[in-house]
Image (cartoon, rainbow, N blue to C red; front, top):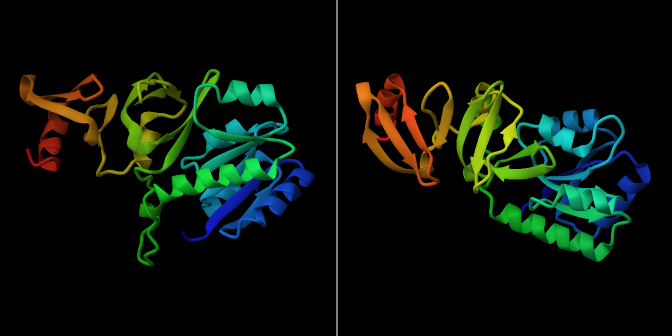
Length: 249
């Protein structure tokens, strides 16, 4: 495996130093930057595009969850927290990993093994010099987004999402039987999605074409799609022509 680029966002200098000492035992991890608050962390992550983020949950002004909500593309994230009850509540409904402070070396090593396993299962990042800036900004199937809706939170791979749907000024996200709200508009979401996987079927919805189970002709030149998750989606007449061309129907 190539070097894993890591960023630390932690308001305590002592805690940052503790993490850096633990990371020294894992030669495959390279620290490309550290920040002591959310705004600094946001700028650093966008500049360095790390593979891995060590993130404190409870920080002044803005917490770790708010940082993840700010990001379009979320690195693999390992949370650090001194508050056991808070951590348990936060992660009760999802698979995000977290480490309690003070950090135990063995527990840290287990977290790193999970990170490596997840990275090995992700699509490789292109290093071609002629890759365009626009292409770099697009998400891939293995890219992750963070969603927090009420007390629940998820770190979701783009490829696991079957449908995006407008609800007011926000977007409902369908994945693995869940339907939380993402506090971004559908247009904001569409700008980042990989075009070969996702298609805007009408003004209200974007689908992942890999989840289509059936396509039938509908009224006035439209199409109706059935997703393998059970949802039925109507493709507008204009988009039906584009969809047929895209899918070679």
